[in-house]
Image 1 (spheres, rainbow, N blue to C red):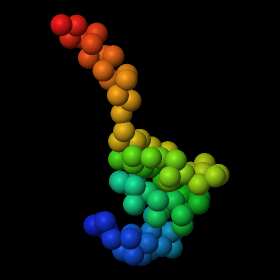
Image 2 (image 1 turned 60 degrees about the vertical axis):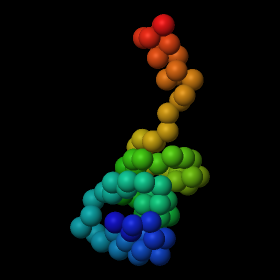
Image 3 (image 1 turned 30 degrees about the vertical axis):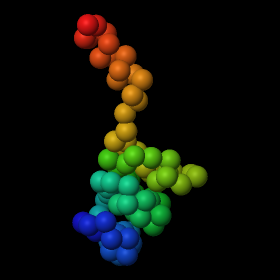
Image 4 (image 1 turned 120 degrees about the vertical axis):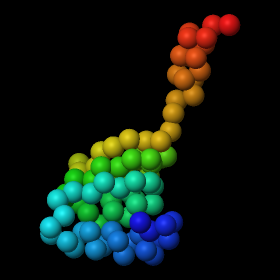
Length: 86
């Protein structure tokens, strides 16, 4: 856990990238996802709680997948209106 510290996040990412015993990475949050994606190009990276996944994904990233923490407000309000029409 880098606790929001960019330098610490880079150190952790490089340590992970250089550890051959690690088979994949689960990065929670944008900072963790961005720093790991910059150094790890082959092993799978699963991301979560990333507001803008495009900021994490390099141009060619076939080793990264996961979920965003954003919602589609128009869709959500549409569902609410259907469920609670009053």
